[in-house]
Length: 438
Image (cartoon, rainbow, N blue to C red; front, side, top):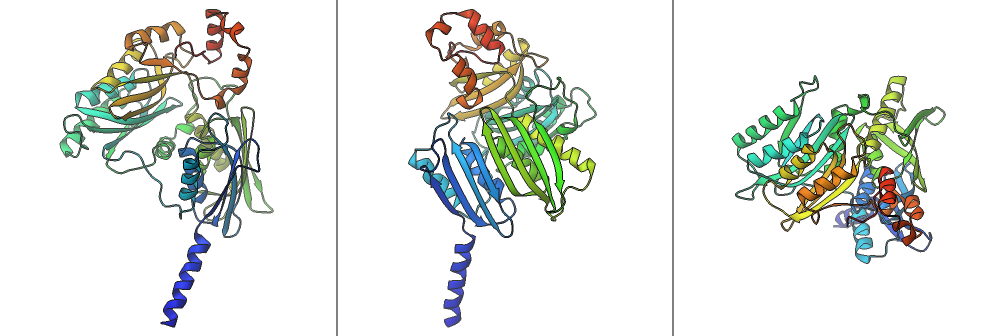
């Protein structure tokens, strides 16, 4: 009996030692909410913490991370996407409860539906063909995310049977779906094989997209377009005295940037022991002290180059290229096939897409360029909107975090707006558009 009581106390001590302690502070920093996490260190703990914050669409403005020895300590300075501190008690409570668990597997995604994974060579109109095939096979698209990078495409698409509203379990139907999609993805006879898979498993969508593109080796392909001025700068050096490899990333700041970098380092089997993340205006500066999971630093020039390529790709995959179009309308069979066909017929290429359906309302976001990746002609955008519906398809500005300086430049009021179409055209050429379409 005495041993049993002793065992209980020991178990309580272990639980107290291993359960993360979370403090959320709005008083210390005038511009951001501080989220402090202390916990026993384990593999993947940093990615889990960052994932909780980014899944809430929070912007991490600064972070200080340390996990030498057996203890993990970090501080995140976070805001919402508009740069405001967190004041919603329900959000604060959710962060505390989520981080104070033992970080269980947070995979989530396509619940109650069938998940399709697609990778292949990107081309204008490919997404239109994919959605047309799914409509023809009586598949209702519930959710989807599409990324393109260096001429490659990766997509996770959640579908249900149009008639029953249930996941697709019939093996023959699954074979038909895979076969027809594989034919579309491999239509250019590229030496890289198109890949499709079907699963009922639930996964974290964005991490899985990174894994798919990493497996497809998109990082090793020469970019279709010339290097952009805002391309990420990545350097890797070894700190021999301490046995670390020091990875520096400098790039344009955006939402979920830290998640993308940490996700890639984790999937490449590197452990982050220390890190400093800082943002200034629209730039992000990140420094990571890493080792392999076996405790060794990066050991060769080839490996160093691979890390540089993979982290550049991780930053670029989610970058917003093109005009952001938002579609909000009643969901109906064949909706996505019709919308993306209209894009294709007007020479628009979808570089990224996020599809969701809630309570029979489709809320879809598309980033589009012209056929060769340049800014699309505003007249073509207007033509497409007229065909789909001016009230349903709108051009939207990005949240404040993406262009704070540009919005400040147009903040002089009605004088700018009174310049009319000339100003709109100039702003559009800069990748912005005044909300005259909203």
